[in-house]
Amino acid sequence: MNPHDEKVLILDFGSQYTQLIARKVREQKVYAEIVPFNYPIEKIKNDKPSAIILSGGPSSTYDKGAPFVSSEIFNLNVPVLGICYGLYMIVNGFAGKSSSSNKKEYGRAEIVIKKESPLFKGLSERETVWMSHGDKVTEIPSGFEIVAESENTPVAAIQNTAKNIYGIQFHPEVFHSVHGKEVIANFLFEICKLKGLWTMKSFVDSSVEQIRKEVGNGTVLLGLSGGVDSTVTAVLLQKAIGEKLYCVFVDNGVLRKNEAENVIKRYKEGLNLNLIAVDAVDLFLKKLKGVTDPEKKRRIIGKEFIKVFMKEAKKIGRFDFLAQGTLYPDVIESVSTKGPSDTIKSHHNRVPEVLKLIESGKVVEPLKELFKDEVRALGTELGIPRELIARHPFPGPGLAIRIIGEITKERLDILREADDIIVSEIKNAGYYDKLWQAFGIFLPVKSVGVMGDNRTYENVIAIRAVESTDAMTADWADLPHDLVKKISSRIINEVRGINRVVYDVSSKPPSTIEWE
Image 1 (cartoon, rainbow, N blue to C red):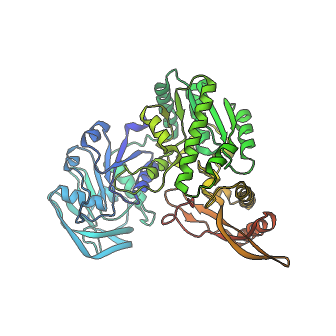
Image 2 (cartoon, rainbow, N blue to C red):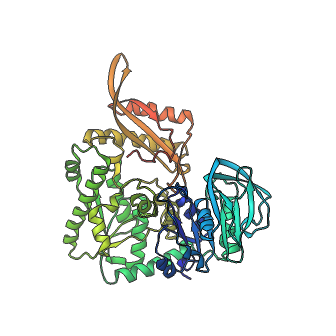
Image 3 (spheres, rainbow, N blue to C red):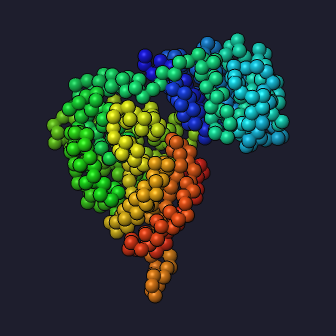
């Protein structure tokens, strides 16, 4: 069966947790897709979802311009779960009543389950959950019953079992909700009666079929960076279309130490890919000269990348499609069409030149539905060596966004050496596989130092190490002090131009993983 035969549509009202809902659903081997809250009802019907989840959101229903969902959503004979703001969409849709609360509720809370419900099957009478709301339900709609309450929230969960519609005030997708995973699983399997078809084996089979249908007899040009995403994309495309895939590796001058040499050897000899290597270091550094704005850096790199691609395509003789290793978080973070959520950052795979190709149907992105951990699982399913799929993520714009300010050869050389020390020491200490990412950042500040008997005035390197599962949220890694001390000592003593090392102890949110 096609893994998309079971699809959960998540209507996004702008919650910072919406992506976590998708992740929690997919962890249950059920495909989930995020769409805007105002996704046309006809499209919802055409999608034939197995279930609908209404997300939370930053708004109050009493805010001017607050988003509302069409009440038609409740007449589709499809199970619905409303989370936080989604609860109020249910209450509103069935003529219940709500109001702003004098007592807002943020953080951990204890709910008491008052009535038997398939949503809470297997759970205790009292459960610790995560609340984040300022409104309250004052009158439940006809046909509904109260299932759970908390000290500050008399209506913490409601249900209409006849219509298979459920609403909860808390956030089960947040790990602070101790048994939130079980709540979501109960909705999927006890209420929706789903089977869990979303596996990487099923994804490979359906993707190969889709790629062959999409590409036909055409040829595909793929930018191979050496990272996990492009590697898995290349192997999946090779499985689908074989020799019709041309991989182009562009040395853009903002890669890690020895990356160009390693990529060429790894993919030509190791994976037997049809690889074309292009040295474009001088071109990119010339275009980036004097540029300090991070968004402009991304646009320049994306634009020049396409130019180099097109030049190589002409040499090949025929080029029908451009392939990219774009992931689901890249899509979510780079567009604002997923409900009222703000755009977090632009992405090099979404610069205007690429968007034009996407609109014309000339871009193949077989991983655009996947989160990072799913890509790694896919790589394992495809038989890619672990040392390739276990690599830490590396941004498309490379070191250009890890150098704050202007890009120069000197700064690049300094950062490469420092970054190499960071990664090698973390590997030696056995922490590499425990971290999501670890890297260095070149800061545009100088500080006074003393080396020997001499006063120095040199640059600063920041160490960034985070733990995460999908990059949507991340916590800074509390590495052993001795390890941080050793990394700092080596950088200061071995990398000329650095006399100070700092450690980044900020999480995402409110920060991002990368600095730019």
